[in-house]
Amino acid sequence: MAKYKIAWLPGDGVGVDVMDAARLVLDKLNLDADYIHGDIGWEFWKAEGDPLPERTIKVLKSTDVCLFGAITSKPKDAAQKELVPSLQNKGLDYFSPIVKLRQLFNLRTNMRPCKSFAGNPLNYKDNIDLVIFRENTEGLYAGIEYHPLPQKVFDVFNETHPKMKKFKDVPLNEIALSTRIMTKTGCTNICRAAFEYAAKYNYKTVTLVEKPNVLRETGGLMTQCARAVAKEFAGIELWETNIDAMCMWLVKNPEQYGVLVAENMFGDIISDLAAQLVGGLGFASSGNIGDHYAVFEPTHGSAPKYAGQNKVNPIATLLTAKLMLDYLGEKEKANRLEAAIALVIKEGKVRTYDMGGSHTTSQMAEAVALKL
Image (cartoon, rainbow, N blue to C red; front, side, top):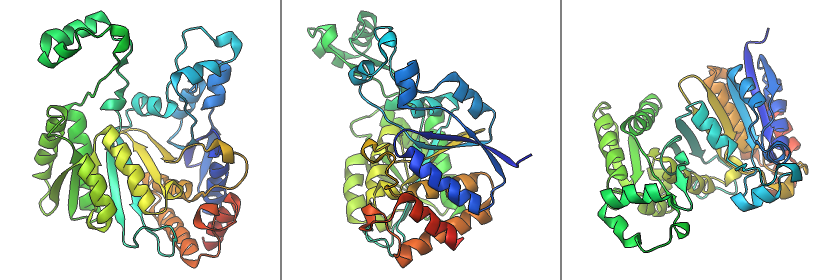
């Protein structure tokens, strides 16, 4: 019996290509694992009306960890049109399967390292080494939205908040409402995860990214929780900045930052910005981590125009596999993998199209495997 059972979810588009690349490298590392395929993504939405079938959830519940490729998502109207005729007008609504996974397994911590590797022609600067901690289950992405706005919901807001009165003459079918729900537990947990990581890996600062001067209640709660957690970690300084200013400072002085922590949407925004500083989404890895399970995924999309072309950069997925190895306690294999990736980038002999080269997805994976 293998030591680990890994749920293997290639998903859509280039997810298949990059997951094939990851498998090549994991096999070279001799990871003692069984890889159990799971169905997820756009094709299952179109054919079954469910992008995350129950059979796949059962696979995840029977495994130690999940490695995930990429997902295609489209707006509500477009999603309806692509359903097979027998499923149209059946009241089915598309949802993001990765968001559902985060909520279903309470994968409350999203961790996204952004590190500039020497020799990468796409580096904005060569001394960037930061990690973003994003609360993964609450905030604007909790999915509590309305359109049109139900009369009962309008009435509650109108009775309890004076600023709702400005909308009293707007027809309810012309009002859309999204909620930003944050809890003290959720805010405290993500802040503590950020500080614990900073302490473990000797980062000197944790930067809270929020907007409490405008989002006074939710942003205020997050700020209070961050300050309370910071008191438990002597020697690590808490910096506080607004999301808009943080975008500017990350572009200007990214090397000054170590660990950043944010709620769901703000974390999503700064993660993509930070990824571009170190080469783009082809270098952006992430882990969705809960108390009992974790799903690891590159942060890029499914890039349908490149699907099956063996063209895209697999480094994001290889770095994601490194995070998975860390989670499993395979530190030696994780360190070897990152060192091999760094060496291939530094030598510059193998580069995919985004790096100015012409090598394929599999050729990049083979180059990393050889360094192992």
